[in-house]
Image (cartoon, rainbow, N blue to C red):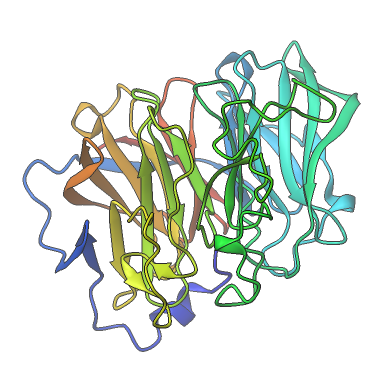
Length: 378
C-alpha cells in the first residue's frame, strides 16, 4: 500500500488513460469487450477505515478497521466491535491492524498488526460458538520493521492448512537494506508456518529453505517489495500476489497450487519485468503474470481474488483486483498461469484498499474511506 491520496495521483494525469500490460507486453486498454461481466457495487455497510476482512463463522464477514477494531457483517448489518486493540497499535505511515484470518474450522482467529513500536505482530485467539475468547490470546510471531511503510501484513490460510504471512521489504524506498533478495530475513517474503504445530509455531518440514543454514526456514517465496494483498484460488489452490511497485510498475505474481515454494519474484533487482536501477535479472527470477505501468491513474495495486461465487457466472474463474489510487475494479482471465484477457468491470470502489471473499465465495470491496461494497450482478 502506498499512502497517497486520490487527488495527488490525479495531478498531472487527468488526460491520461490507464495502460495495462499482458504478461511481458504493454498495451493500451481497449473498450470493454461484449463478454465483459456486468457487475455493480452494492454498498452493504459503512465502517471506519476498513482495511481487511475474512469469511467468519455462520456465513458472516468479519471486517478489520485500520485503527484496531474488528466488526462482524451479517444480514443485520455491521456489529459493534468484537475486538479492539486500538490502544496497542498506531496508524502512522502504513501501520495499523492490517490483516485477519480464520483457520478452516473457525476455531481460531489470527490478527496481523503493527504494535506501538512498529513491530509486525501475529496474534491468535481461540473462537467458540462464533465468539472470540480474549483470555486465550497469544503472540505467534513478530518481525521488527525498520521503517513505517512496506509492512505487508496480509495473512491467509492456504489449502494445505498452513498460515501464510506477507511481509514487505521493510520500507523506505528502493530496498536500502537489500531485504528482498536476502534469505536471512523474513522481510520481503511470503512466510509459511504451522501456528498450532509448536510453541509459538512450527516450520513445515517441506518449506523450501528448511535445512539451509543461510536462510530462514519460514520463507516460502521471496523477492517481494510490498505484497499488500495475496490470495489462494478457491477452485484450484493457485496463489496470486499483488506486489506494489516502486515508481514505475505494479505487478501480480502467480504460483501453481503444485508449487514447492522457493520462487524469487525479483525485487529489488527487478520491478515487474524490468531491471531496477540497472540491476541484473536474477537467473531464477519468476516474472509476474501481469503488470501495468503508472502512466495512468494507478499507483498501488490492490490484489484480490479469483471469483468462485455463483451470483455472476460470467465472472467465474477470473482474478478480480484494483488499484488504490485508480479505484477501478478489473478482472484478469487466466489459463495455466497465463493472462489471456483483461476486463474493466466499469465500476469504481473509491480508494480500494482490499477485497474480502465471503463464505460462499462472493466478493466484497473495501474503500479505506469507509464504504463496504459487495460485487453483485448488474
